[in-house]
Each structure stands twice: as C-alpha cells, then as structure tokens.
Amino acid sequence: MISNKTPKTLRLLLGDQLNINHHWFKTIDSSVTYVLMEVQSETNYADHHIQKVLGFFGAMRHFANQLQQLNHQVIYIKLNDANNAQRFDANCAQLIAMHSFEKFEYQLPDEYRVDEHLKQFTQTLTIPFSVVDTEHFYSTRLELKNLFEGKKMYLMETFYRYMRKKHHVLMDADDKPLFGQWNFDHENRQKLPKAHKPIAPLLFNNNLSDIEQELKQAGIKTIGRVDSPNFLWPITREQSLELLQFFMQECLPLFGTFQDAMAPNEWSMYHSRLSFSLNIKLITPHEVVEKAIAAYHQNPEKITYNQLEGFVRQIIGWREYMRGIYWLKMPEYANLNYLEHTAKLPDWYWTGNTKMNCLKQTIQQSLNYAYAHHIQRLMVTGNFALLAGVHPNEVDAWYLGIYIDALEWVEITNTRGMSQFADGGIVGTKPYVSSATYMHKMSSYCTGCYYDKAKKVGHKACPFNSLYWNFYDRHEAKLAGNPRIGMMYNVWRRMDANDKAELLQQANIYLTNINDL
Ligand code: FAD
Ligand code: DLZ
Ligand code: SF4
Image 1 (cartoon, helix red, strand yellow):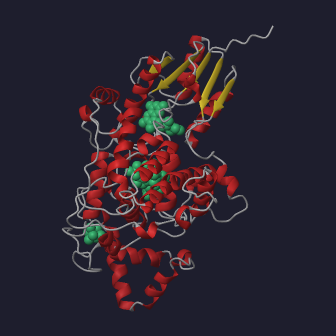
Image 2 (image 1 turned 60 degrees about the horizontal axis):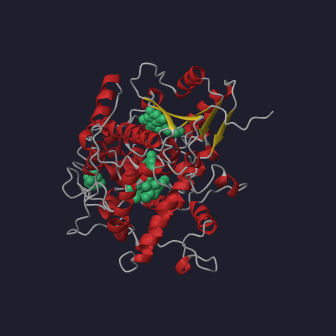
Image 3 (image 1 turned 45 degrees about the horizontal axis):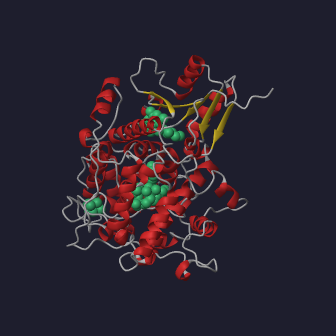
C-alpha cells in the first residue's frame, strides 16, 4: 500500500531566505522541521562589516521566532552552540542522522558558491532531496540568458523594456510605455542646492548587543562600527514595511531628482535603503514596485512620473538584470580582469584616513553605517579604485564585506562589471571614470577638500585629474576604439606634449605614494 504521509523532512533556510509568504509556510506540517544556522563558513568568507553580520543574525533569529509562533517546528543553531559544525553541509548531515529525517529540501541559493556547496552536499545524501524557488524575484535565474540567446550585447535597456512589457508595469492599455517614453532620466540627477537639507533617515533601534558579544566570543573578524543596542537597520518584515512606507511618503518625491547627488555628512539623501530588506527577502520587489505605483497615483502632484519611473527601473531593471548576468556568466565572471589591473587597494579604504574629502566622506560613512548610495559606490570609491588600477579581486573583497546589502550575486556584477570594467563591457558600455569635474558637478565634497579640484598638476592638485588621463593613456589599445569614449582620446591626442608628460608624471607620483594621499 502507498502511504500519503509526508516523509519526515528537514528544510534548510539560508540567512537571505526570510520570505514569510513563501508557499512552504502556508501549511503547518508536523513532519516538517526548518533549520536556520549561524555558521563560520558565512561569517568568514569575507571581512564583513559588523552591522552586516548583526543584521543577518538579528533578522534570522527574529524569523525563526516568527515561524515558531506560527507553530512550525524550527531548529536554530547559534554561532557558539556546542554541536555547531560551522558549515551548512556538516550541520545538515548531523541533523539528518540525529533525527532520522527521510527527506531534505532547500530553496535555490542566490550565490553560486552556496549553490555549488549544496549541490555537492545533496550528492552525498542517501535520502531523497528537492530544491524549490525562493518566490522572490520577478525573473528566473536563466530568463536573461534566454532573452539574449545568440546576441553579443546584453543591454540593460533591452531587458528593462522586456520586463516592463512582460509584467505590464508602467504600460498603457495599448502596451506602450506610459507617457510615450521608457526612460525619464534626463529630468533626474541634479546637484543638491546649497540651502537644501535632505530628510533625516528613518532609523530603528534594535537591541543586538547580545549577538555582538557572541561574535566577540567566537573571535569573528569584522570591520566598521556599530551601536549594537540601537541597531539602525530593519531586521523584521514589519520594520521593512515601515521603511518602505517612509520612503514612499518622504523620499520618492525627490528620489530621481537627487539620485546622483552627494554632500558631506548626508549618508542616505532620498535613497530608500531597502536593499538589505530586499536582499534577505523580508519584502519582495513586487510589493516595492506596487507600493511605489500606488503612492504615485495617490499623490501625483507630489510624486512626478520621472521619480517613479527612475525608481521602478532600479528594481525591475537593474536589480533583476544584475542577477541575470550573474547566472549567465558565473563562475568565469569572478576571474575577469579585462584591464589587467594588479595594484593593491590603498590602506585607507579600511579606515577612511585620506585627505581626499570625497573618499574620506564615503569611506567613513560606509564604516559608520555599512551603507553608501549608488553614486558614492560607483563614482567615488569605485572610480578611484579603477583609476588606481586596483586588482578586481581586492575591490570585490572590499565591497563584499563593507555593505550591509552585499551578496555576491548583486555585488560582483556591480563591482567587477559596472564599476571596474573588468568584464570588458558586459554590464556597462564604457568604464565609469571621472576627474574632479564630475565630483564637483554632483557633490559639495570639493569645497573644503585639502586638494584643489581645479589643479591638474603640482602642489595639492586633485589626484583624480591626473589619474584620469593616466588611465586613458594606459588603456588606449583597449579603449580608444570604444565609440562612447573615442572623444576623450581626441582630446588626449591633441593635448600639448609637455602637458601630457606633466600629467603622467603627476599620476605616477600619486600612484607611487598612494597610501599617503
Ligand atoms: P536605492 O537607490 O533606493 O534604489 C532602490 C533599489 O534598487 C535598491 O534597494 C536595489 O535593490 C535596487 N538597485 C539600484 N541600483 C542597483 C544596481 N546597480 N544593482 C542592483 N540593484 C540595484 N546593491 C546591492 O544590493 N548589493 C551590493 O552588494 C551592491 N554592490 C554594489 C557595488 C558597486 C560598486 C555599485 C556601483 C553598486 C552596488 N549595488 C549593490 C547597487 C546599488 O548601489 C545598491 O543597491 C543601492 O545603493 C542600495 O541602496 P538603496 O536601497 O538605498 O537603493
Ligand atoms: C551573509 C551571511 C552571514 C554573514 N552569515 C550567515 C549565516 O551564518 N548563516 C546563513 O544562513 N547565512 C548567512 N549569511 C547569508 C549567506 O551568505 C547567504 O544566505 C548565501 O550567501 C546565499 O547564497
Ligand atoms: Fe575629491 Fe578631488 Fe574634489 Fe578633493 S578636490 S573632493 S579629492 S574630487
């Protein structure tokens, strides 16, 4: 006789799989046990920011409690538990043997590394196993690959339009983009006016001091600072929804306008700071997009369409696109170094102790809050690392550790691809480099900086200015043919020979003394 009884099942939940609306949790089944575990394989694969580890553990512990309160059976392995084998596979194997589980189930990991780890683990099992979707993203892992099958270019804009059409987001009844245009960026991206004070960010005060003690006890190496009794990031779905609501009311009306603006001591401006909640799946991209559209309809005078479109593009465009590229190109992607960069990351990336105000501000706020907004990541820290010729492995390691939202699937495509051009143009069509001109256009960092933004060479000349030309000169063979930057090579080639030599000499002095800048 065939029995209909569910086999005694162990279901693994990773730290970034905290989606309470997953179909797994719709029924209470006494034959199913969920396991969440704090393990050193995850705390130690990078030098993480203390706020990142606390955020993950705090959210995982809350989620486990929530499941228990809903009457699900849960095993929670804490970092310092006596039997913790400190790896997903070893802990699961131990539990399966100890409790005689008859089936093992897990959700698709977002990272290639963990995906491989769990695939290998399941090959060792003598019980049946299965893997299910996380039910979080708009697109599947391979949807971008299928869309671009046979194509040489993987344009984000093509993917974005496909997503808009497929999910009928910001489309009219005739399946055309609202207001006849896909992209309203030309109305966005202004500098912050002098007298303008951005809204203060909504902060939480979760007490995570116990977890901080446990990390100390275990000797986990972390970077950055934290006020652990008043942990400021959301760690529950309720808090994430509160932050989402705050964004819609207070930030979305100016999101696009000041999306690229930077100012000293303003660490989040009008950005949503939802990336952590999204990446650990406390909220879904669908609900973020739906809430933004609803907020626009409720208040069209306050939230103009360009703000809404700019924001929606980040979520269904960039975020899903980066994930698609990741699953298309891994594992090769992690070794790409198109520009053959070899330098070390300057020491001050870990302290913020540099005289360059833009870098000092961005790095210090990253150490204080485990956060910097997109343009700070791209055009300040990323820009400098690229100009300085830093090896992409070093740049990746820094980004993977320092930001609370950093998970490889979204970190590496942004860092190695968009920011460092190490993929030779898969994600971006040109390297994002700039001199002090851009920094001054989009920020007020240059005012009050030790260096002079207008000087290219000599005492106190802004390092970005000579490093910028040095970068183009060094990579002429690889970049001059790029139609988006050919114009810069015309300027460089027409420049007076003495001026060129002086610029290269200045760049050389800065690169040789990079730790003293
Ligand atoms: P907002 O500006 O409010 O944007 C809303 C949301 O859009 C974000 O929460 C995010 O989910 C999404 N989004 C926006 N831009 C991107 C993008 N380029 N790629 C993917 N999603 C995007 N994002 C991460 O989530 N994790 C990372 O590890 C990460 N590393 C980055 C490294 C570099 C070098 C660069 C240039 C960007 C990186 N990003 C990363 C993308 C982006 O900077 C962050 O998503 C964003 O700053 C998070 O802050 P926010 O939630 O306030 O974003
Ligand atoms: C980032 C992180 C950290 C620091 N610690 C843990 C952990 O101890 N246990 C866990 O399940 N997840 C952790 N995470 C998130 C994982 O790295 C993330 O779930 C995988 O990388 C996804 O592939
Ligand atoms: Fe940065 Fe140069 Fe401006 Fe100083 S002058 S803030 S180093 S761009």
